[in-house]
Length: 413
Image (cartoon, rainbow, N blue to C red; front, side):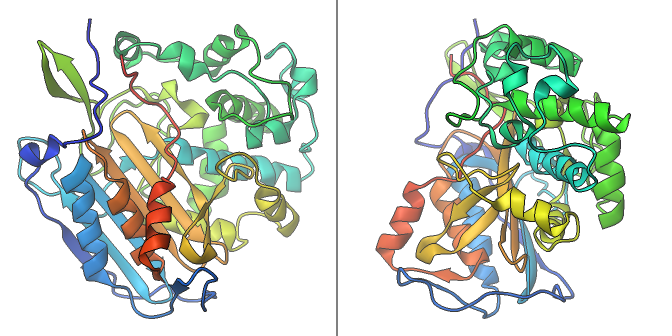
């Protein structure tokens, strides 16, 4: 029986990763953006000065040194653009990853799906108050009391199918290359009782977004991936972004992702780069790049993808410990600077993509995690990216509030 060692201290990556980072400066700054500056209440500041590229690269290198085999990052804003890479493409090989390489974005997929749903709301093809039962009769036992809004905001109370599908490491390995239909994943959740009555609490559930992908198909007559491509990828020119379906490989340059597995008393890295993404579907299958995700969130929050009422709905009344809106959530930095975006996890990959609310500045980070804890370095990277200076107490408070990483994870036993 295989098991994963649940150790989050004392990184083994130092013995495996010898690569230091590489950085590149974009030739042109991002234009046509309004940036909110000024002081913040808690003694920090969000300044309009140039990017501290050395600080950005140093933080990225520390992510690798403290808990990853590779990491990519990109910042875009009025002060210019920067992108960096650190670590190695593959364990045992010294080549460094491409700063513009692809990676699995996990639950960041949810913001793409929510955008399509809200576009359909703006077109009056469905309503946020429509019930699940109206569009997918019989999919979930209490579907007549669950609304589209509940699905988008994780207030449906529907069981998360991943808890049933990935109960053990052997379950994960058995599912790795299997093709799943969305209906199969939903059925796993439908067999379990609800976590709470719809609209009475908040609990993150990947099943919500599998159902939303199915609703897109019913409403439009097309698979959700075709609607994402038609409505988002092509209009924005996101050429490095794919909705892979059942394609097990990442087509472009990419760093490999690993999971620590115990074999014969030793922790060894299992290369998990290739997998059948239908296990995540419309809850987490997208492959993208740091540049594409920055462009996506800039366009979304800048009003290019949604009409004003639907964008306001997306950001209004966030709930839960993450401050979750409709397919997007808040991350608050020292001094009160509020970011909007999403993070995601799928075996071998963790991703983070956030923007200022005014769409001025974006940061996207991809990490291939290994044993360790890179949270402090990730927080420092975010502070440098958004130009936040803060006293030690405020920085410590930020580190205590980790960036959430929802998505598919290897069981701990």
